[in-house]
Image (cartoon, rainbow, N blue to C red):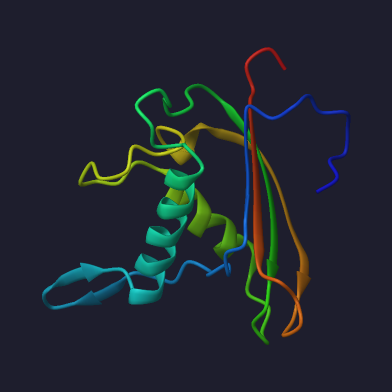
Amino acid sequence: MSYPCDMPAADLSWSGVVEPVPLARPRVTRYGRYLPDADRAFREELWMCWRLAGFAKRTFQPLQGDLLIGLTFAGSTKRRPDLSNLVKAVEDAANPSPDGGWQGLWLDDSQIVELIAQIEDWGPKVTARIDLDVWSATGW
């Protein structure tokens, strides 16, 4: 992704060959609320990728303070999804899981004070990809 100004090296950077899945609305039944299976599977896939990248080691601490986020998406499905739903799916996956099974990349997505996101390419012949760059906003 090209950013509008000269940016220092990201505090956290990750790129993965993952098919982006837009966040769907939670389903509500008479038994309660739940996330659709595709949403849960996407979160678990991101968690696995981030763990393999070393973001779940004991030495990794979730980022604190205000954050600047850069996201780039490329997908291989026929229909291009809404960018805001793609962003929300990644933001939610990067939060700590309620059951404590995932410590998160940051403490809460409310820390994000600036966001740059784009859909770089989309279509059946495109290699699916998600790029994530995170900077601490302290001192900006």
